[in-house]
Amino acid sequence: MTGMLLTGNAAVAWGARLARVDYVPAFPITPQTEIIEALAGWIDSGEMPGRLVTLESEHAMLTAAGAAAATGVRVFTATSSQGLLYAMEMLYTVAGWRAPFVLANVSRGLATPITLEPDHNDILAARDCGFLQIHCATCQEVLDNLPIAYRVAEDPRVGLPVIVNLDGFYLSFTREPVVLPEPREVDAFLPPFQPRDIRFRASQPLSQAVAVLGGGPYSYFRYETHLAARNGLQVYAEAGAEWGERFGRVYDALDLYRSEDAEICFVMIGSFATKAMAAVDALRAAGRRVGLVRPRLLRPFPDEALRRAPAGKRAVAVVDQNLSFGFGGVLHGELCSALYGLADAPILLSFIGGLGGRDISQGELFEMARLAADAADRGEAPPPRLLYTQDELREVRKLQTLAHAERNRLEDPDDHERNPLSQRQGPALRCACSAPARPCAPAAAGSRPCTRSTTCSAVDRSSSTPPAA
Amino acid sequence: MTLLSVYPFTPFRGSWLYTAMASAPAGAQGVRDALDILIAQGRMPPEEDLQVVV
Image (cartoon, rainbow over all chains, first blue to last red; front, side, top):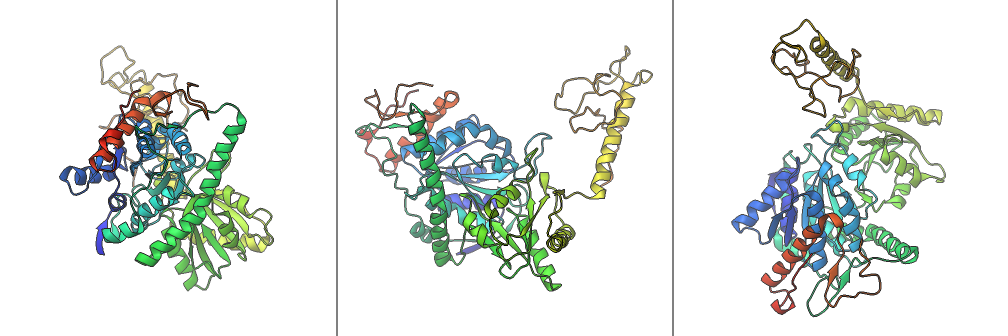
């Protein structure tokens, strides 16, 4: 075993290398690109056997990945955010092929507004497609869960593709100490892919992924896929336990941190859960019985374990780094469904935080624990709450004021130097909105303050004052 | 979609993978790459090779 400082992306690449993947169909997207750059470098230099092919899109990439897996080789690929959404048709399609492979998704918030920073709306959009989902919180967990993901995907009881998820920036570009397992020890854990009857051979013609007529066979195959995904709970538990025996790091569907005797629990996924661990330690030091339950598996959903974990708790603060418009936090809803009907179920509180990489502070975690204790005392949950500070709101108001001022100046008919709509010549200003080439028409937003991020704001770098940090 | 191959029947004497309207060539690429890899690694004899068409 060798210890190294690795980014989350490098940990993914090492995990794929240690899993001895044969084939990497690839397409770049921030913040995932470092993964395929690392693999491309190793394959190019001969350090790693295998073939890497760049496709024309994530949609094509997922098609090639599924097709190669259906032909009988071990496949790895990676994407993020808009790329995952662009591939969405094929996520659903290839899962039904029952050809196992592993996809790393580096979570990044979805447009609109477009951003590079992370939240979980991308991966949760793929919640129902048939891929299993493993959510990681540290770079070590990322690396270890690549070989584990192949064990689960390729197990005859499962036979489904698996997504290993990590947060963009907070994990993808953050170096952490990571222990690299010895390749031969990983080989003992993960033998070569045995495709069994999923393969193409000239002497044994086979039609795969064929159509069905009628809802009877359709329902049969769809429900069979669901049952295979459910089998993933047992298979992941076995694989995670065996990894623990071999390498000393056990993985289970839930990561429980000081939750056994806790009265108040945080429930959250991803790297921000490590911030909650620090808050739990601080609250424990202050004499509060607080813990953390972090679902590592989200599909299959570990409902039985989740029914056991919060049992005896007074209240649970669910922190969703996602937002289902018109519904709320996805994890909160899923936990509600798991706990429904449970005698003495804890009060569930819903918090939305960390959207677009927005930090979740220790102070906010302390406040959430306090609100949870209050809710338990009252026996009633408060309404869902967005984690957002006065300072953040003030900054947004500044941006809106700037956008408004720029708009007014643009629309000033006497400002011939700046106004492109004037008959006189002047520098052409363009909108920084989603239609980049469209000039700011006076009627586009009137003189109302801009309330949408897509509202036109003039780009004039010479005179615009950036908001104070 | 094509209903050439409908479970449990197929009119093909060869193999068939139903991919998607938008990405059939990428599916062929994946099959071709996988066959090349299997042959190169000696995991599949060359006589088992297939011609991949879209």
